[in-house]
Image (cartoon, rainbow, N blue to C red; front, side):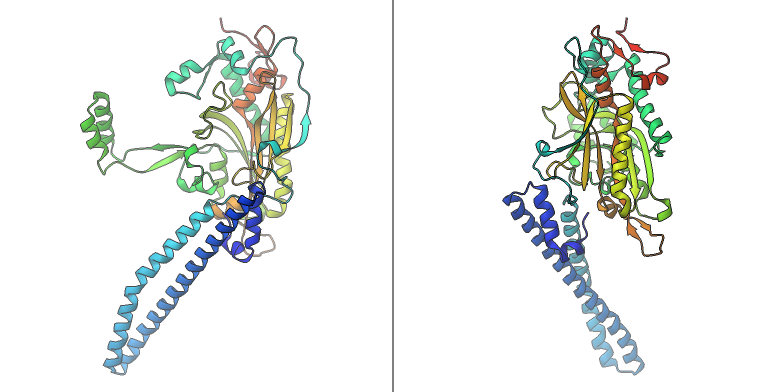
Length: 470
């Protein structure tokens, strides 16, 4: 969320940022200039309406006092005239208040849809092809056989079942079982242990269902509504039972009647797409002391994404699922420390991959490939031998005060100045499902078995190799 005062005083700053995000095209500049013109126009209307309302209220209050004074002087004519004026002013107040709220809502709606401003060092570009490689770890392994993709390995082991998952839930779900399920659990536990024990993050077990305000705070709403899952409930259990009974009987008329009842709730909660949402919102609507910062939080949770924009992409396997497990890292810090914290978070995410001895590279995302709320993002891409390609396994972003403004999350500086907005950062530390994919493809053997990485052996109950179920 951007400060309208900044846009009012430095419109070219936002225009330049949006042009950079748009790849530097002439079309991006035209659109940015039109948006800023609209924003400033709404702001001017809103402020003019507020001024008019404040003037009217001030006059109403003054006239009310004058009525008392006129009555004290027994000047009934003046008192009557003033009472008529007050009555007329009162009639105008609701319309001005409504117009002020309308303009404020429209302005805030426009502001909420504007992405964050890229930092100056973010490389320019239009899409992922313009991302810049920062570093690499390890090297691609050589195999005496043609390495398989993870789903081929998992299905051959008899421990990765997409067909049954589809019967239960549809496409983009999986059932892992046996030692493979234990390996997935081990990865999550391993990541948490490293981040809490070695990197100083505090483990949190947050809710998986959150309100609109929480999703807005981290900028999943309103722009990415179609990518989310929403869990609704009925206010009346009786109505819910009636609907289910009518549906099961195929009684369309009764079903339509039941669904039309006003007793059905519109209430609902969002399934989290990432633990970034509840972790970051832990500081919403609060003022921290500078001594409390940085806050470093981590959680291993299921995550849920509709993948509305991923039609036809990664339809096989576990790369892009509606439900997956991820270890998330979140930092809350001061503006002066956020750049340093970003590099630290990246190093923490890299550390767990190094311990697993997985080949990966780090890329700095260009302006056209950055996330909506990000000022700067590093992606860690792990090498998948079966695919013969690097695939994202972690994304570490610094968001500045963009999310903090949406959450009203602030801190009080040690020198005693007024509250300032915190800076927020988030990153995957790392995606458990994709780590499982990388381990299966990297540690696969010619006979179809998978060797357990040394770092995970303490979590596997003595199991060193995952073999086909008998």
